[in-house]
Length: 119
Image: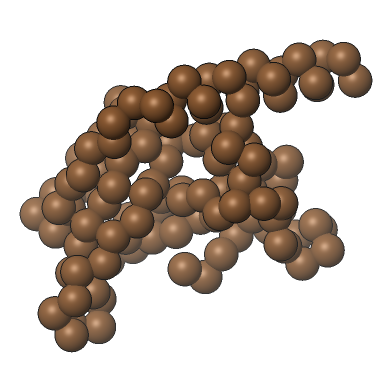
């Protein structure tokens, strides 16, 4: 139990330190999925902007992260999301939601740090 608490405190301190750094923004419609995932791996988090998939001309954006631990350190949870890139309409990513996971009874689609989401 003490190990779990110590690990949580370490993750929280890493998340707090990372939250103070500026976050980069990227227009991803001309990037491949590998390029987007590489940015997230290198930077830990980024704002990704892309045209709405329904073609209405709106630009959508959100903060995406490399690891569920980023969300956990911010007292939130990770949800799996997809974003459209140059080479696919469903590039897998993660984003954070505040608070504990709201999954179906914690049985399916849930682990310690995140849950599945339909976007």
